[in-house]
Image (cartoon, rainbow, N blue to C red; front, side):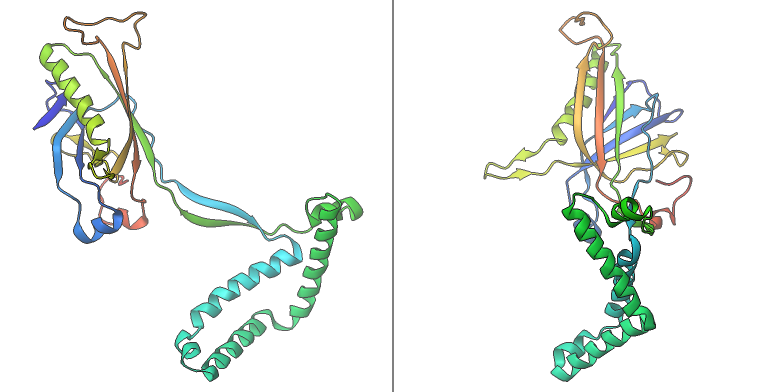
Length: 287
């Protein structure tokens, strides 16, 4: 069964949005078992006047490798990755001789990486660490501030912008309902009830809750997916809020008590990250 507003919406001729929901499965379980089948009632609504802003939000962070000490730490970190990739863990476990051989390989790798300037770099890093320790004792926050105070100089901050991870995307949609008939008011009630019910946990009567359903939100046009609009990943419905008669200066209702106007706002959070691979087989603008 489908719940629809407005009830005379003709899917063949207009753009619209569908909302379907299904039992929660973790990302790992969906990869092995697939997505659970839809259940409950599908909801069909008009496209909101203001569709949600959807970006590809990624987390990048600035990191400073300040001065001689920071530069040395950065290079040690980079070398550690290379060494770890070349490390033969089996040889380490198999025998003491194997462990010694791998230890020598680690030392040689660092020597080759830094060459003959390791002693000089270590000296500069040590002096910077001492300056920082003395500055901290005096209440100055960084070695650069100590140098600025004493010599009018500062260490090169060696700023790097480093990638962390993609972020899960939130989005929200707002709908205004003004029922034109008793039948349409019943449809509105059913729509609001469906969103509220399936975004709530179920009490299993054994001290446990069943996790609320996940939702698939899809832009449609003429009965097919609208590839001119962005796609959504499966999402949790984190909040359903409803306000009655928000533009009236008093409560107004139809016979039977139904509010004349209702505004429903749905807040979602996608449960999967958007990756470059997701665009490989997509038409239009993708996600």
